[in-house]
Length: 444
Image 1: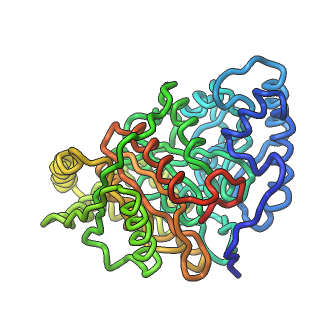
Image 2: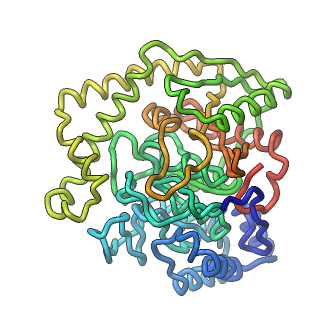
């Protein structure tokens, strides 16, 4: 059964990270009280949502008390976060969504976790991932519709944030693993420019694509955490002129549902009515070869990233992932390099195309989260931008025919992350009636 209106969550668990940090800094809220509220929300909702691979309540409360007893360490001081379970954490197991790694305990935090801890964050636990951040789903359900997928592979991170179990979470994206679950669950998902966030301590899936990113219920929360990850303290500039966007449909437009089409059209017209420029970007001839190149690169690199697991624990790898790995081993080096060169040519096209424009606007997903838990949905509308290494963000700007969220995606120029986040803030301010609410999950 779907729920057309997201529930309101009162109290600290419903706070955004930004508001929580401000309340802690002002002495109006303690980190311990915030973490306890999140733990109570988890106890209430986890039996249905199944977002967490591991929660260490004792360690999180101890860390929160340490934050309360110490001077502010950074912009996320005392704020609880979740970490996708392909990212190493000291003191918590990292299971990769695979029985091969049951009980595996890393010695140290991944760089991204260490950076967020240094900014004051409290690690609440690890969130469910599809196996090796791939195609075989975990047990997580959609917070609003338990019979629907929450998306993936960062399934647990998206569901936990959307359901107010935690205000902020780390995810990873190889194809669409941040944007798709964020869009399905009605929250903000941000994939930074490839290579700008350290991947040290991440279980790699595909070397050319893997990017660590963020999920939150508010653009400002993403911006705070992104600044901590990349070491930027610069205040996001607010665009003073009306932004200029290219509306892109792509060769895969026939995969867009009426919900995705209608949401994109409505958002585009709303922005035009506010003097934004939104002009169609025709699909260039030959663009479809990018999809073919991605399949080759992804398979080739995933197979090699899982070489040890495939050699020693093949029977513990799911049939779906084994098919990907087997196909990857069948790709020879020459075909792989040719696919890499193809993507490099299109990255040049992309950089040239965005000259004088602020972003591309396009659907985040094919539509609403599909019914069923045996798939995490299609990466059709996300994977090309991952391939092009661009920063991209999904915003919860629509609702589909069955009442589930529909997102709109904005794609910026590589290394234009700050400008993209600033523009996303403006979009939400101008188009979202409840941007400042503490509604969980966020929606329109």
